[in-house]
Image 1 (cartoon, rainbow, N blue to C red):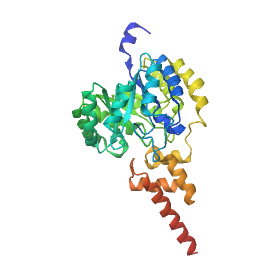
Image 2 (image 1 turned 135 degrees about the vertical axis):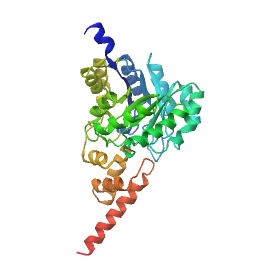
Image 3 (image 1 turned 120 degrees about the vertical axis):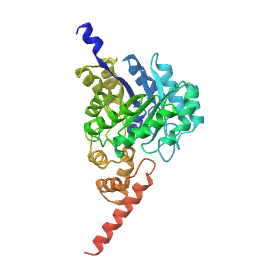
Length: 348
């Protein structure tokens, strides 16, 4: 490659979320020692931002969301002590996390916070964004379930986040419901509307997570999320090591060592997985119906309890437009479907 070619090469920053979104795949049971080993591998491979926390975010370790093997500060501290260059990030969901818990993460060494709100509720991010900026943190914001808003409306929400002080605003495909045209249109709308950097977070329910990320970058996203081995809620995320290879083949610079990522994925992460991260029926229908990825395991449990099909629950949840935080609707829908089945059987 000539000097001119190298200078002109476009670039993206890969952010790894194996130790946050990936926590959902291991029931939030990574130990601090495992977090340290994975963080060290990512850091040595050149990943500049590593997200660490309970799978649902700070403060989520509970009977409702699942108890983690350690506290969020313990996870953050383990990652910070194991890395030399990478920035350690945490996820903050208003209504679950508190500013006190974010303060604890800062004390443990976190320097970036990713504030996640439903795509129609940017207003909920104002307090944590302003506070985090006052503490000197880098602030990224997630517009979760971005497929539920048309591009122009999503851009309006992004403008609000930028006005509060967000330095990066993410289009987030929380349900894995997008195909490349959807991802590209939303990123392009944000690129026209705001001057902040734009990120893209892909789930892989329809099998196009990496393609969506490539399209997002073509339309102006400069931060791209992934996780090693695709570890993440439901079908998992775009796979970090695959993203690195695909972007390189597409002519983009990522600043990471592909083989270093592969080594960590294969030798550290893979042995910790109880099963491969695949697109099974539930994950596929979840994406097709546009339902939040963390509904994956609760839907399986409800289907077994009430003797109804997982796909029927998910399609009905999608029809009702449920969002994150409405997990109680899974039980309601399952019970209603079971009741309908009993009535139909009784009339035969």
